[in-house]
Length: 491
Ligand code: ATP
Ligand code: MG
Image (cartoon, rainbow, N blue to C red; front, side):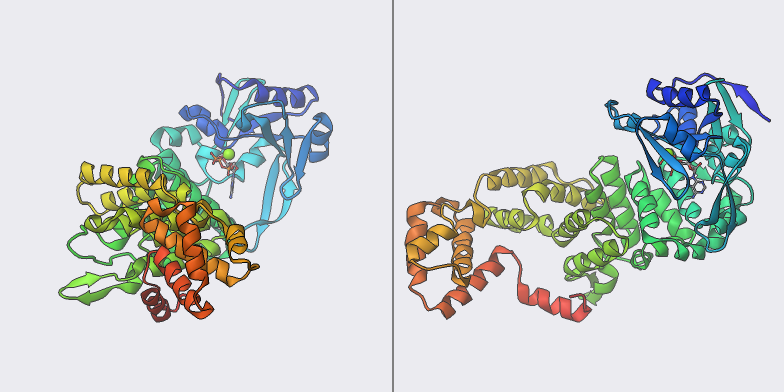
């Protein structure tokens, strides 16, 4: 057995857990990603300990634990620890795995007798290292250190068999390669290509988690392009594959797929938050559906509207949380806003802020920057971007929603001596449309005068004006949007 003396700096919170186990006579090792990260010199995201102790032994040794029954993992928690990455240590009994029949999980979990058993069932050599804190010894049975040095992801044992046991490992290989900036060893890569279709047995949630980690890595484009070349991409979503090889017009140097990858890479480089990266990767997903050859060039009319619908479907299928979906879809829906540079007026900026929301408006600018860089064109002329930013700053000082009007629903009811009803909504929407156009009209005197004028109208007439105002406030030609929705059956 290859066992080297090694000294790593281990946080005392982690060393304590190991020591409690050792003192009770239970052999234990740090295992998995944390050992790999210690060798590379990255800060581990989480700490895992494998031990000869069984769950009931572990639970008895620590005051606060939680038990995840599936794999025997016991979470050992110390709430006094400030650093969240050190607060919980996952302690798992040595495991053996046997009898995979559905390509995704062992039919049963059996306890292993030795650390060797436990390391042999791990996915990649770089993840199959163990470190004994007590003895300051590194256990490397599968040449994990050598692969770390060569920056290679390689399965432990026969890749065909290992991917057959759990197909998610294929996507994990790409995710790890992306996070660590490693390559995938050739035989492992060939086996991924050969077994790619097994990924259809894997749950959307597990796929989503690996996909998300790829998106959050420093250079996601490489890994995602490899998912396409190795045949895994369609299991993230078949919609993504449709952009491959789809040519655009002169404004774009790249195909739709290349453009999305480049936009995403830029937003990763800028360290933009997750939903902006996701929007960068998905914003043109409907271009293949809306592409029409017209006047000697390709047009993609309405792709942001269809794209928003499609993005929602894709992200819901991947079981993303509602909040992430809502934000991403909004960004996709409005990503064209800052493209039509000359036409942007202050009132249009107020409307876009109303539509995407104050909390997303800067993200929309960041998406636009990523989009622009992704076309392969030079960076935005700085003054233009500065101009947008100053317009946003200015517009943010003005009222942009009904809530900010100098008068509210209750005061309208009082003024008109009426109760609640649709007329209140219509009046508010009309007042807002006037104020969006001219913020200086947002005074009590003016609005009260308008309320009385509007109240004098027939309800039918008021309804028409109210609905028109709403459409205008939303800043789009609803009729045309309706047409597009119908044509692509995405409503
Ligand atoms: P991260 O830095 O994201 O935590 P990690 O390598 O620690 O990366 P985890 O998902 O935390 O990844 O898994 C911990 C360890 O468990 C891995 O290093 C690996 O040894 C093992 N492991 C996880 N998933 C699998 C799997 N599907 N098949 C085999 N071993 C796995
Ligand atoms: Mg981990």
